[in-house]
Length: 120
Image 1: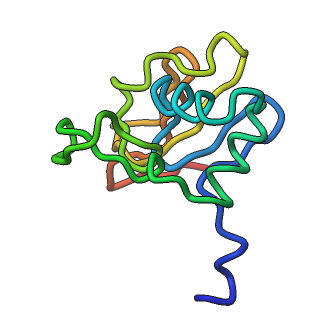
Image 2 (image 1 turned 60 degrees about the horizontal axis):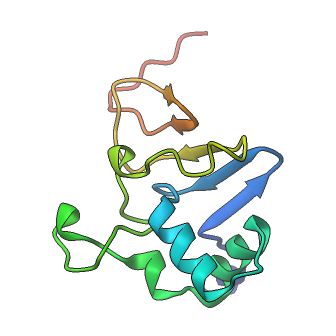
């Protein structure tokens, strides 16, 4: 597994889509922008992937932790508060199982509960 470690990313941006495990919230983005005031979204994503800042792994009381907010590995859909919506970006996330694939505002939730029945 170590040989593929440099290919793993926590966030990925393609066109108007941002892919993460659970999502980027205003709190995460504001915190990283406070530390890197001139950084673009692409640069923030590079920071998440290359430096693995602690905010990436934050887990608040909502998810059984003690951090001030939930990071992109722990956030739940009801916590993301429309982050990146004004920028016209759609966030594609898993982590929180849904009955079906759902799009709410700019959050596309693709983690569906099993059994998943695929019809052709």
